[in-house]
Image 1 (cartoon, rainbow, N blue to C red):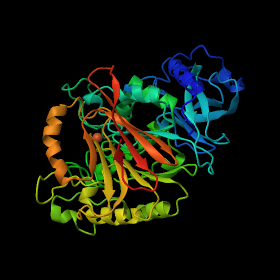
Image 2 (cartoon, protein in one colour):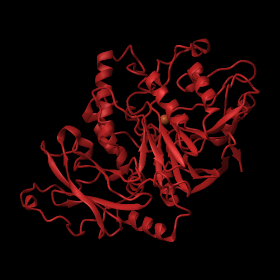
Image 3 (cartoon, rainbow, N blue to C red):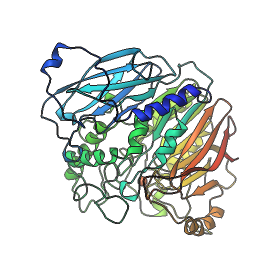
Image 4 (cartoon, rainbow, N blue to C red):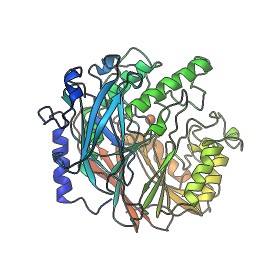
Length: 516
Ligand SMILES: [Fe+2]
């Protein structure tokens, strides 16, 4: 949102990271008659950390959840607890610009979502919470640019797929050093899988989560990763879920294995999963679930530079097909009629130079049958051929559409074509599939290339494919997007070395992506 990060921002970043867990001696800021009567809370009540999200030009959501016993339901008394908050223009919290008291309610797992307004655009803020005599770490966040702002640089980090059991979330340590303005997380924040001793870390609990308390415990375990916690504490996040926040490959109200989960049981599971998701994410009250439904698709504006359309490709989709012919059924939908119209309206009416689309799952074609004929993955956009082709056809009249995806546990960077069935079809956009933070662990790179490189001839729109763990980083400016694939050498341990695997460029008003 600004030019190259100033020395000032760098200095503050370092200080902000160091503040984590070291705020106990900070001054109290809000003398209150009620304070004398409050129930003291134990040390560690802020152990799940703090976060911020969904930046507006004048606002931000601040999040925390009181949970002194995080892996056992939270450990809070069954009562409403007042939580004071404050947000300041400086790291030492001397220039406080807004403060107030929120209520952590037992029915929301004692989570707190403060929707602060009245802030200034395109600048850093610092915030903290206080409850029961305890003070949270100090977090740093950032507002979106002024609605009329056309210039500057917006630095976005794209992340997805963090399987606790497959590795440590080491890419976040490098992401923190890169100081993004906003982190975009496109799904698989938790995995619902059963605990296993096969990997470097083991899931809590005894099986897959089904109940609200079980999902809460799973989120709490994930939040204990120190690199994830630090990244949440130092930049706003924009999040959406994919399948593993609920159940592998679910679609609408259909679970992965309908023979094992009844419809009623799965609807109850959806409600529990969405409730826990809301409780742990820095999202607005518009995302408070209504039973087995949650409103997650939404738009965020970054001045006139970029519009971000965050999709929900799970709740409204048709169930996955199981054959090539079935994937071409025109009645299949990925987005549902309402969301599809909302997306098209938002693309065609956009005042922004760049129209970003956060799609949990890959949009470009993946043909995994070498030679003649095609074979697709039916859970991705390939399984919804007619709707995908219609959407790409619309891209031809949208300014600079760029799709940001996850799910595949690979880096796959592609040109988007009007029709993948037609080799001469026009390029209409670009897609970045942002590998995974830890899912699939440290892959054998030679084995990956031996398997996948022969498929390049069948998929000429692919520009980069790779199997390292990491994330993608974008510097978005008026004249183009400079993208870097940042990878780590390992997720097997808590420390890793990071490097740039590939550098790419998307030129404004020139559809497609080029390797630099
Ligand atoms: Fe995943």
